[in-house]
Every structure is written in C-alpha cells, then in structure tokens.
Length: 191
Image (cartoon, rainbow, N blue to C red):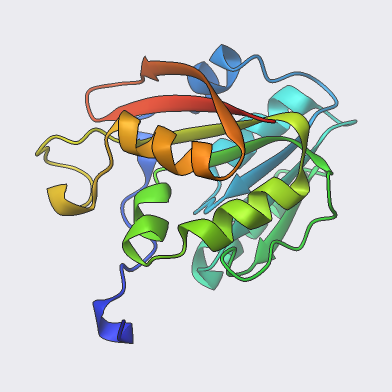
C-alpha cells in the first residue's frame, strides 16, 4: 500500500463528544493501576486516567504525532503532573513499555485507522505484549453509521468486526455499551 493511500492518524479531538471521566469510571479504573493510552492525541483520556490512578499509578501516553505529544507535555508541565509518561512512537512497530506492565489499555477512536492501514495484527501483538494477563483492553470507536464526525463510513468498524479482530489476538469479549451519539465502547480481557 502506497504512503498516499494510508489512513492519516489524527483528527478532531474526541473531547467534544466523549466524556473521558464517565467512560473510565464505567470500566472501574482504580488507584495505583497502570494505563496505556494508545493514540492519546492531546491527552484527554490520559489526563482523566491520571486523576483516577493517582500518585501511585502511572499513565503511558503514546501517539505517532509529535505535535499532539508536545501539547500534552506542556499541560503535564504546567499542571505539575507526575504520573504521565509520554512517548512519540509508532505502536504498530513498538510500544516503549515493558512486557506485562499494563493493567488497562485504552484505544479511543484509533482502531479503525490501524485496520485501514493493515496494522491491526502488529498493534494487537504489541498491546498483548505489554498488557498483563487478565488485563483490560478498552476500545471506543465510531459507530458504523454515516455521522457528521468521524472517519468515512468505509473505515468504520461494527462492534462485531472489532470483536472479531480482538478474538483473533487472544482477547475475550467482556462488555459493549453506547457512549454517545457517535461512538460505542467494547471492552475485552486478555486471556
């Protein structure tokens, strides 16, 4: 696939139509947990997770876009946040986190891009490597409906398609809920 045909990671922020605190409380995120936010963008979910996991928890925020990571780093510095570690990285190649170090992995509105770029197997392999056994994978993505926000309909995945991808990579389905007019949340457990 030529570079020009690739799905460009990055788009509008989900902050305007997803409530990070509501989603994170629904997955029962706890103090002292370790979170990986894949494709964190400017850090809406990373910052919310940071508040929940507290000083003894840690949030790894990773994005391929250096500009997004730099915005998050500025917020971290301005607000003196000590439990978020940021990385600029291509998660399809390597997530700079130790094996079995993560309790919860967040993929907020990013899976469709990895599927479009045929990177799903590589990304899931890396997530599986860093996620502890029985760790939680939380995928929020756009409903497969023609809506005013989100990627083209041809790039959207139904919950059944997301489940199929996750099952192929050693995850068991846990829960599926609507999280607003444009998105759903599918939760999986690493087996």
